[in-house]
Image 1: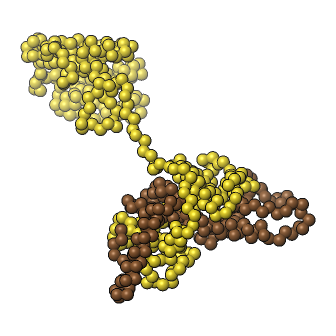
Image 2: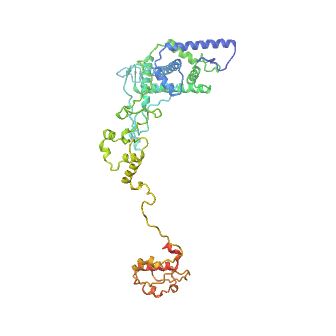
Image 3: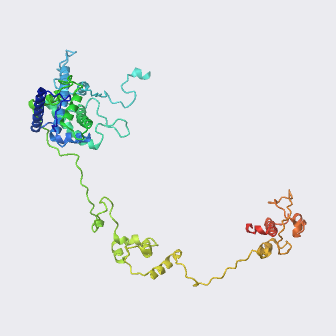
Length: 145
Length: 347
């Protein structure tokens, strides 16, 4: 699994070799630490979907690596959505005479999620209403036109 | 973490005829999607969300599965480009770098950066080392689970011999008693109704005609033939020579004078005997053809030379209207045969 160095340029300096050795050692240590850490995403799920893509590797450490990467990806999106949700809650209220205070619950909505996903290149469009006829959503005067 | 209801618009339950497909379309993905939904919910809870709607969680679960598939596909492509079919840790790191290149990671601008100490790996190391470990809630088995094939143990296959060359997934052979000539086994195993319905028993027919190796009958060939004769006249064997007396065939020679009148005697009688009898010898000389137009008969394209035959011309014109069409035809055939002996076959 650790065949050769990961340096794409292939620099052959002695300092580079030492550095590479350190890098490899760090990577080895990281991979071994993966076995102690249990990611939130189960290994069986990751193995199944990796297998569907053609990923063939009996090493469990690689599966854990992908699981940890996926967990980090989702957690990054969730934290971005949380930021959007907090910004919405903290926005000043137009109507100061509202009876109830602004809801301070942190709820994940489609709007926040789509904003967060847009930065990662995922386009998530949520239909605003369910249209069962072509005239749904139009104003009455425009319908006559 | 509470799992609230849907958004303002409910998730539509669509039919198969509609163009839009439901989020969980196939049954094969349902289990994986459900498991990923649980994982996503746990990650959201660890991030800090207290509540959520159903649809964002479904969307995130779908994104997670797509991410895993995408990483796998990219890793495989990097491995294939290096001439390998099994993925390496560096293939996975390259794939993660490619996905993270959209958002950016530390050291991305350096083309000579080491993969082992890539920014992606360092980020992951931070996750493993520092963040609180949240294991998956519950445990799941390896999936998809292959269902073990249930071997049919019906009564028909109880006594079946296991053939080495015949695969198991083929249907079993029929009951041997249905195609053997053993009368005892027939009555016991096969229901009588099915056997008594057809008038012609195929089983007996085939067994008589020789079912090799399947019918251990004690009949000899003679007995079998006798049975065949009784059943099917078309399968009777040919008679030996001189067993049945048959009259000899007399083949007339070509040189003999053919008596046309003897051949067409019934025709002459039908016409009423109005034709004058003439000599039996047919002349070889071709008569001249005379046409008479506008007589009103059906076919008068050929007129025979009445002079050679000696018949009266008036016979045609005088008694034409009185005679039947059949009689006229008979006369014509007669005359043609007399004039042209070579064309007798046509008549």
